[in-house]
Length: 198
Image (cartoon, rainbow, N blue to C red; front, side, top):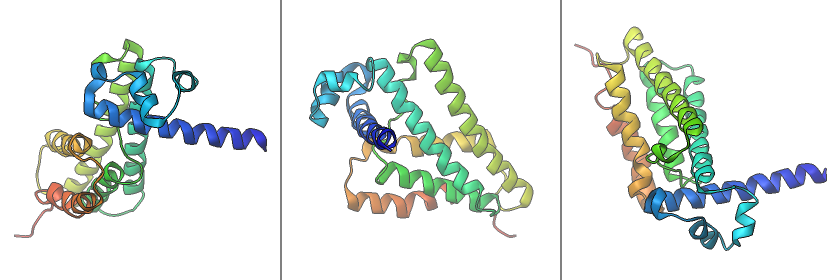
């Protein structure tokens, strides 16, 4: 029982650290952020932070793994909905936007991938590509079932993913703005996708 409680406490604190680090990396970039910045934001000592990560490269790598996992969950929930291609695309976008502006945030922008060591960089790029392919499959399904208008699925996927993934760069936690983003972005990003009759 004590082990389970300790594991839960560890995960909670680790998540706090990754969210704080994401905010720092999004605002200052990799080179402009230090572990001291993250520790200071959380009220931790440097030693306490080193209990969770060994260095800055590992911290940004862990931030990217977290971002990828959140995106994967958003995608899985959409694909499990059983709707047509357009409905799944809309739901995925809404799920992912909600993550970006909701309680799960801040989420790290994957703009510093070149700063990772080769093994981490290759892993993150592979995960990112799998995620993009999964969204492209939703678009392709929509083309086949007639719910999505004719489009280049690769370029359309890039446009949608780019818009979603850049939200943390300009969104800074204002609840009113979060509501606007959640109400507006899914509609804006899918307006050209829906196949109209005639």
